[in-house]
Length: 299
Image 1 (tube, rainbow, N blue to C red):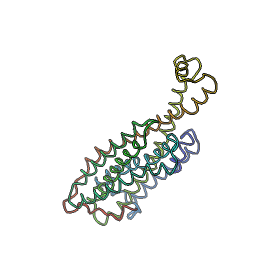
Image 2 (spheres, rainbow, N blue to C red):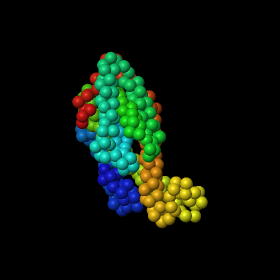
Image 3 (cartoon, one colour):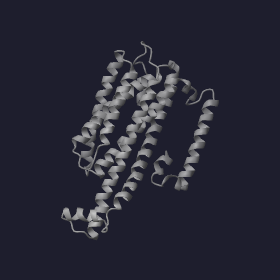
Image 4 (cartoon, rainbow, N blue to C red):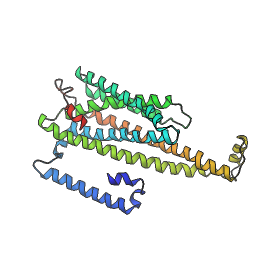
């Protein structure tokens, strides 16, 4: 967690601290795996990953955590930093995502109770999540508030339709006595996916912002005739002050938006990767649909 949190700030493996933390993380993970496989009653029994539904479901919830937490990190930064929203306004604009998720969870529970194949519900949820995320890749600095609200609501519906049915699919082939240990693995993967997702999208935003700054900033100079004509047409006076304002404000905002859109596109690809994974999950028996341990949802 420390390596993922500090990596983007310290330029990843250019920092000795990050290298040390990475080595410690790898050694710790190897020891954890060895201990779990060599102990008769481990805290987290990795042998349960032999179950196809649990292993694929855990992988799926990890990617889902990347999409969920990655989006929740970069969207408020974009709203407050680039769109100049106040914190309260940004919170209100993002609220429809939670509302959509709440409605979708209730709907998913009803569908599971009626015997609908949870795999189909998850696929519909992925479609909603992917579509809502794709809409965010079309953003620019001039979008209206509605362009933030509706994609957030659609994405929230997707998140709500995925969560409970994916839990159901992951646990449906486990024995009752194994479900508590299986939930530990499942929730661990969700947490790791979220941590990795936050680190990845933060890195993408930072790196692509720098790339955009270098590319777009190069045209802001007094020797570029096209840029000189643009200033004249806009009624601006070419000079050092103009270069500074455009470079520090306009170009940075455009470059930052470009980096943010690239991060949203990465999340969109994450949703697409989920589709073939879900297709490999076994359909639960007719008498077990909706019987996943709901108590573990809050763990």
